[in-house]
Length: 455
Image 1 (cartoon, one colour):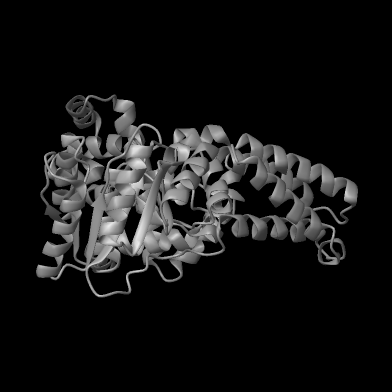
Image 2: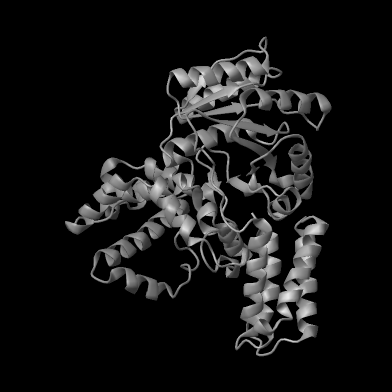
């Protein structure tokens, strides 16, 4: 997400970073480029205008013009104003009430609403330690009810059954009643979507809202629709007392116009963003961290939180003990590390949170993709247990057999072994006293060059 905006803003602000003096002329020129970058990112025009006016007013102030590093001072102004546009800080769900807390999900058909119900249920269970029940009030699409049932099993949430013969209000009331009997903490009600906003749809969801009085009413919107997402959110906001927005499909949106427009147009906070298709791919929306990514400064805090939440701590401790005993890092350990990366959303998700990623050439970034993880794992799976534990025995005939077993070339096996050797060396350094610091100095703050690690 934000790739094109990040590239444009990054190059514009980079020109200012080292300048010893800012003038009205070069500030105007830079802001013209920032304006174009925002418009190309499909940010709504009123949002762009208000943003540029505020940045210009602050940029012409004494704090920037008299700063010892005026270029950096202006970048800070742009950073602060982007954060303001998107809502200052993360606004968490309000669940402070006598259980069950009811969450009503609204949105257009195809926006990823039902999937978001499951993702939110999983997030509430794993991050907030809440028991969750989900119910579908979409009586127009039997497939939607079945989809939610399947997803509920996957995320281990309670599923309240419903069918197309029932009234949506009756379904919602019955689900809440059952949740009370079972002492469930949170009930999430999925609603019917339409291909466009219509009066019948709005009337039904208003009726639902009045019947169950949800503490949270979340609007699910597809980020790839750009500023149209903000317009749709505004229409729903005029009909319902929305408490927040879930921005979906952000992994497929290179522009980011929706994220920068929704808060300004609706006044409602973006509370979560969907960053992939898996039920684990939901992140709380932190405006300051998102802006940090846009400006190429990374988001290490989110990366650490994600690692703590999704990485198998037991596996990591087991590996650490193994290395401490002097036993080498083998291909089975390497496979475990690849799987851990997959659990964290893959290479792409991790890379966009790393500082300085904007400075990596586009061609280099394109070579690093999530398909490589599954390719590497397939090669390792094609080996015998003995080969995985003793990679040094993998020679000519073995390489040929391994390549044939996974449908790849011998060159692919050689590349894997080279990457494994690099990882093995890094692990050895990490196991030595002060090894981490030495390793970071050795990398010089950069990624390994050609033919190196896949991440």
